[in-house]
Image 1 (cartoon, rainbow, N blue to C red):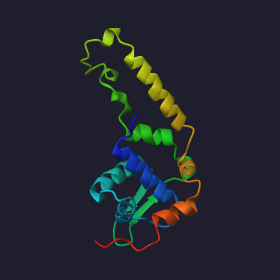
Image 2: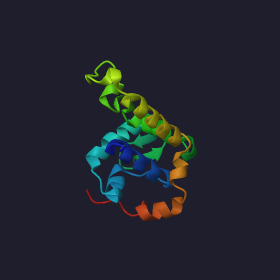
Image 3: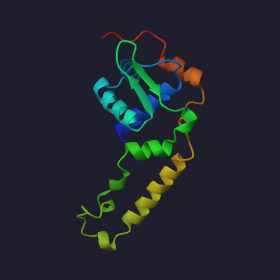
Image 4: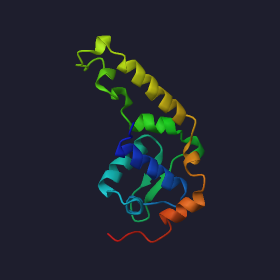
Length: 149
């Protein structure tokens, strides 16, 4: 299984915010992870809609976590960011066009695997992803000056 870049970037944003004691801009996060600012803006917008991130505009604006890291469940984040309902075509009974679906066991096997994956993630919080917050903040250089532009 592979998470979408949207979810991958969302988790990275949350991790960066979890280790920062100050607001962090999208530009800084994009620069530190070497990822697209435009894509990151869409990811942050989704995280804000989910109530996970506060985004403040303006000269002194930036991003902060809306909840403590220990209150952000990974399974819930992945469920909200990924479209697991259509993991494969046969998961969606309304649009399924697979001719062998009535005699196939793929849907049952994959739905069990997906459930086990998400249940495993349910055991962890954002705090579990940053066991060394000072070291992670150092690696991300969150206190360095923001990139130009």
